[in-house]
Image 1 (spheres, rainbow, N blue to C red):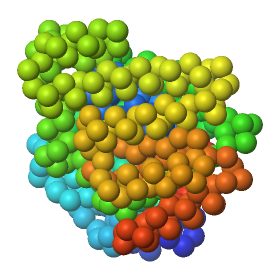
Image 2: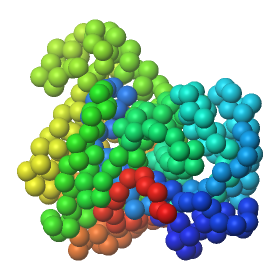
Image 3: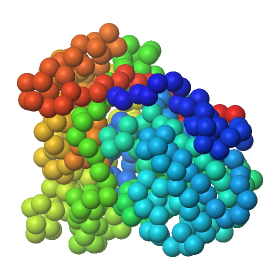
Image 4: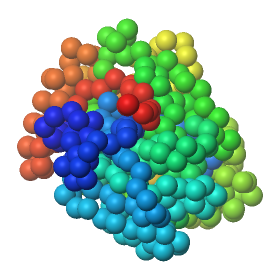
Length: 389
């Protein structure tokens, strides 16, 4: 993983002082996330099981007069300014600033009086890796603006607003999982989210007690949501649900799958449906094992999820397949791509004392294939968005 020097919260605060003078009113942090299991089930009203990462995006902020927002990004070194006219309708602010402007737009659309503000952003969440850097940015900005304006928005309603900023203002058709995980996760737990009614259950995920760790592998194959392939998968699922006469593919049970597939004429669509229906069941099976404290036993479900994404949903790339195969060969209990696909990250469930050996094996496999050396990080489940001071 890529890390900049110094604590990310300190960097955000220092950036604010350097850019604007004085001290920020406060600092707000939101983490990246990995999805333990449940890929492309979120927009099908299904189930997901993400957990938050220790990597964070931090926003240092203060109010400023008028309906204007000034934003400095450590990563780009740029400062952008936008006003009320720019957030009057989607698309007027582009690039990374669209994620910030989108939050302002969504809050105003929801009837909130959003204060003008100066913001400085620093982050340890790698961009383009499928770890929800965009949701982390949106959620940290959202928390900052709510507090600066004294605005009331319950935690359970915040993910939907942040998702609306990304879907409508930015134009990326993501589901509700990313923002829910970034905002609502708890340390030491995975977040069991029903994407239909947005109910959550915090599932104990005590890796230390089991002598295990999760190794996150950045494939170095850029992960992008706002491209045609992600949208095409979503459209295919929605069309299949309509053809099957159900509100969403979540409503097709595993024991009804074979009969449902016979009603679809297109082989590609059948594969897409098979992935979503079986993936929902894998989430439920994983939750049952974790509730029983059987953390080691979830490994085969993780690997089966990857096979389904590779063969039925067709969203993996050679780098992530290589990482999964190498991790398993080196002794990982299970491994899978995490995120929307076409690049991004892999997670591997490993024995804690074997994490370094598995990471080395993946890097060796990459070298043999001539791929860019992957980044690796061993993680434990971290807390969701919070105010730091």
